[in-house]
Length: 354
Image (cartoon, rainbow, N blue to C red):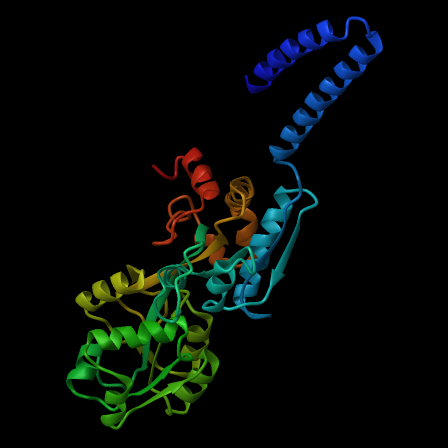
C-alpha cells in the first residue's frame, strides 16, 4: 500500500513535469527515467532490509575450552549454521559469570549462562557491581542444573539443619568465590543463619576447589561435604561414587523457597535413583542454562536464531545427552530476564507463549 501511494504521488509529479517540459521532450524523458530509477532503488533497498535469507555473522561466548559448556555452545552455533546457509557463527571461550557482562556491554552479541546469573547481571546483584539492563533472553539451552549438597556416607547427619544444630565440624568444599555454585551455597547457609566463619569456629573448614579436586580430596577423607549446581546425573558425582560412599544432605523447604526467590532460581526435585546412592526424591533448587543476547541485535536475526534452536532438537541430542531434556515444555523457561522481541515473536507463533 505504501508503494502504491508513492506511485500515485509520482504520477502527480510527472504530470506537473510534463506541463513544464512539453517544449522539451528530452528533458521530460530524463526526468521520468530518474524518478523511476529512484522508485526501483527504493523497492530494492526495502526488499533487502526484509530478506530473511541473508547469512548470519555473529559470535557466541560459551565455557572454557574443552569443557561441557564449550560443547553446548558449539551445538547451538552449528544449529544456526545448519538452518542459515553460509552463516559464520564464531564460538569463543568464556564463563558462566563472565558472559552476562560481556553480552550486557555488547562486547559479544550472544552468550551462554545460567538463568540465575543472567538475572543477577540484569538486576545488578552479586557477583555484579552494576546492572546490565541490555541483556535479553533467547531460549533455554540446558533445562536444569540442580543444586546438589553431597556428603560422605560417614557424615552422621542426614540434613543440613542437623549439621547446623549440632555445629558439626564439617570440611566443606565450594567453588571459587563469586561462582554460581559458591553463591548458592553461601546463600543457603545464610538462610540458616550460618557463615563460613561459623563453620571454621566449630572446628570445620571451607575450601574453594573445583569439582575434580574436591572429589579427589573427598576420597582421602580430607573433604566430607560439597555443594554445587550441576546436571543430573553429574559425571563428577558418578565418578566419585565409584570410590566413595556418598549421600545427599537434604534442605528445608522454607530455605529452598527463600533461596530460589532471592537468586531467581526454581524449586525442583531430583528423582530417586538418579544415582545409585539416592533412594528417594530429593527436594532442591535448580537453574537452567540459557542463551542470552544484547537487546540491540535485530529482532529478525534473533527470531531466526531461536527458530534454528527449536528446529534442531534431534541434532542437539546427538551433540550432548543434556540436550535430550530440551522440549516445548521448558524452552521458554528462561527465568526473570526479559525475552528478546525476536524470540518472543517466534515462541508466540509456535503457541508456546500466551
